[in-house]
Amino acid sequence: MDFNFSEDQQQLRDAVRRWVDKGYSFERRRADVAAGGFSRATYTELAELGLTALAVPEAHGGLGQGPVDVMVALEELGRGIVLEPLSQAVIASAVLSQYAPAAAQALWLPRIASGEALVVLAHQERKARYRLDVCSATATASGDGHVLTGLKSLVPAGDHADAFLVPAQLDGQIALFLVERGASGLRTRGYGTQDGSRAAEVEFSATPATLLTHNGLTALTLAMDIANAALCAEAVGVMEQTLHITVDYMNQRKQFGVVIASFQALRHRVADMKMQLELARSMSYYAALKITAPAAERHLAIARARVQLGQSMRFIGQQAVQLHGGIGVTDEYIVSHYFKRLTQMEMSYGDSLQHLGEVSAGMQETAGVFS
View 1 (tube, helix red, strand yellow):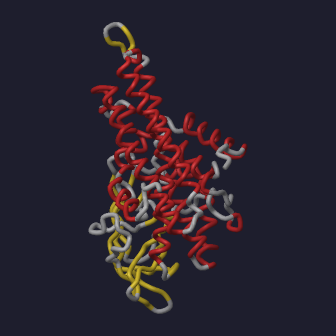
View 2 (view 1 turned 120 degrees about the vertical axis):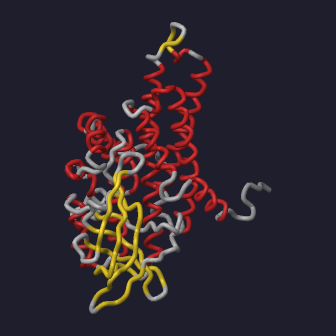
């Protein structure tokens, strides 16, 4: 198997990296956090780079690229801890292109590709924890369509989104719906999250909705697998930059008249961070390559990747703060923001224990036994 990136993928990486380095400074990010944690102008710039179109089929104005191309872009956005949820465009593109009726695809996919529309997944409910089959929202037929009632939490940029992908109970099973922002009975309450990004509580009260598929749980599982693969890719970029910042600091900070990078014990800790980064990178590649696998194989592979990524995110984030000392937790210093991002990511779309449970449940009786 060839693990080298193609020339087009290298050019994509270089383009996104240049934008992060030159166009998305720490000061700009802090200004966006102070303004609420989401910037439509920044999202438009991502669209102008072609990133919102990456996963949209060419027939609908997209680039029709695969999971590896998406992974490359998200790694570079992770280096800059970019606030805007590009992964939501990837999720929406995949779900709509695989499950939505032709009319819904024609209406929304070109708008997602151009960046005109931000379509986000609104699935989390307060009592569900990380279980996808727990859903209290309900939908009923109304005329030629459906109306939806329920409350969804932690919806990414929910008060800025143009439409929502919403699972709800319909005729005794979970179906998946699309709800437009201007629909009657829809209310949002936005708030900042721990890492500076934006989320919202989204309430539906007899809100008109478009049915995408009756097989909502299958579509939702695909959405979550893509979300976790995207999170893995972004986390690799976050960890890589966290390690870079830490090493740079150690080469400047002096103690007893010498830089602390010369202390053997600290060099060993940096080596451990590097090892965790490379373990995470390899599992992120694994997750990206398994996105197109059959559903059961894909879901188990993603869970395996998230177990390693969770361990790596926690280790690298904590070590970075400890190697910096007190300055590492101050809001004015950049590494604290990387630490907060890693901490929040480790608990998003299922924490490490949740994914470890799924890996354990998927083991065969002969797992770990060689004969």
